[in-house]
Length: 113
Image 1 (cartoon, rainbow, N blue to C red):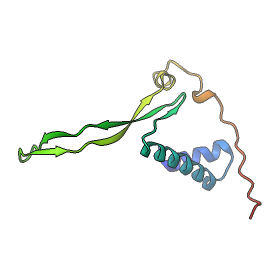
Image 2: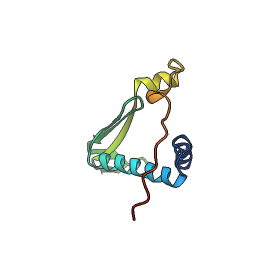
Image 3: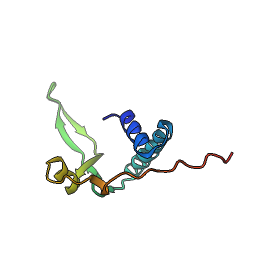
Image 4: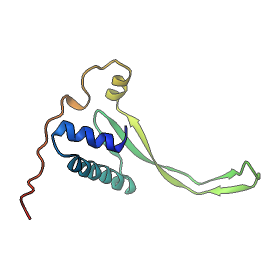
């Protein structure tokens, strides 16, 4: 599934335009990226969690030349499935994820200029 597919699905389920659905998706994803950049973990119940981890610096060997090089420490995000999603993927939980049907969202009032 691509970001465009997600926009189309959100627009159809919420009854809003694709443009508005895209803006919502961009806001959500942007918020998640900024939280991860700050080192915060993200937990979405029924879906999973993103955890920021740090790999320590280490010495490694370049396989082509055999020269030892220093690999600096770096941060990365790791995703862990929720048990609910894991069960659903394995066919054990046929109920809807994240609490059931999607409610129709109202578009914000655009009359203010």
